Image (tube, rainbow, N blue to C red; front, side, top):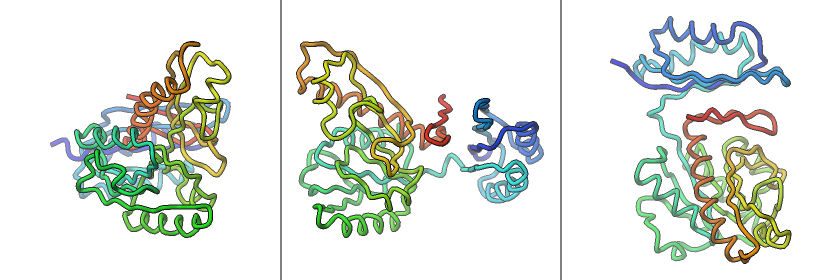
Length: 286
């Protein structure tokens, strides 16, 4: 029997013997490597790897993980090992614009995005989304003003913790998270920005682009950091426009780009295809 399928990801200072150590360990524990990808950043001297394998019983994964500690310590690895069947728990934050929320919910319901939906948080009431199928997903209305931001974020963090959310997605959530909250969510909070970053930051990116007469518009999915719209980029896409397009046309076309960019970025994260590399990312695509 093939057993449980697992994914091992790692990064460390590059040196001889890493691939041999990993593959030998998996071989000695009767694991069968299905896919292996690696990247050596010769400028930074850092090595990255993603290995998908099977051949081990699900109940034996914890022991396999514990045994790998020796190799990880030997090479100074940042690493993770997860059974594919163990879906990541996702919480979505959204404001007035709900196109990304609607798209993610659809992809989740048809099992294109393999995840557990543990909650939706919005600063708008549930009635604002009555046209969407939110059945079975806890909804939290958390209004916020400049004066209540601290209290609202305290409540938000409590909900995230109680739901044991692995990933927080800002699906056009039009509130800036505090430095304290972004620090707690390092590497697991994904934002969609309606611009091809690093250009046109802020809330009215499409109007800025229109004023500059750009010929391409885009969207960027990135991890949230304390530096606004400066986090490591996961996914981007663009679409050509012309002088005939109004700001409203750019917004309409931009919604389509935002949906597909955010969905791809989240899928990469759910499948452990994204490895952080300072201000950048290494993406092991299919």
